[in-house]
Length: 139
Ligand SMILES: NC(=O)c1ccc[n+]([C@@H]2O[C@H](COP(=O)([O-])OP(=O)(O)OC[C@H]3O[C@@H](n4cnc5c(N)ncnc54)[C@H](OP(=O)(O)O)[C@@H]3O)[C@@H](O)[C@H]2O)c1
Image (cartoon, rainbow, N blue to C red; front, side, top):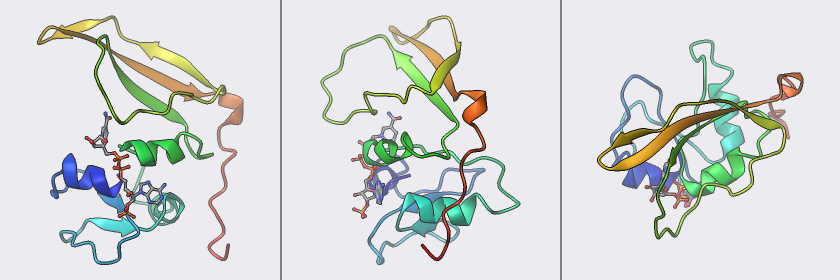
């Protein structure tokens, strides 16, 4: 997650049952024990995705980190909660989803507290998966 998501959504507390990693250029960030910090998304992927203990890596926001992640060659799947409502917002999920992603599932609309929503999953075309090579540490 980006540093602002760590501050505003996680509110400085690690999400349970997963390894939490915060992306920030600030070397003086005061993070609890066990929460990892990386300067860039690639640095995080290099350290996390190569760990045998980790099966999947999720980018959970915010807008700035999503903007880089959506174009990242390692991205394989996008999970979207689509809410049928208009909001006055100042931050946005990337408007353009790369063309190599297809919708593979979408739930029927459900309702909660008067809001209609559905869960949508997009996957990168099967023939384009596994194209990603981790960046060379010497780069
Ligand atoms: N709807 C959702 O699914 C969802 C999910 C998460 C968050 N949010 C919302 O999104 C908002 C936060 O989003 P945001 O865009 O303001 O902030 P953000 O992406 O959470 O964090 C931005 C900060 O993270 C670091 N960072 C992010 N991307 C980076 C990159 N590609 N390379 C290097 N560093 C990077 C930088 O930290 P430094 O400045 O410390 O270097 C940057 O200032 C909050 O309001 C939150 O509620 C929504």
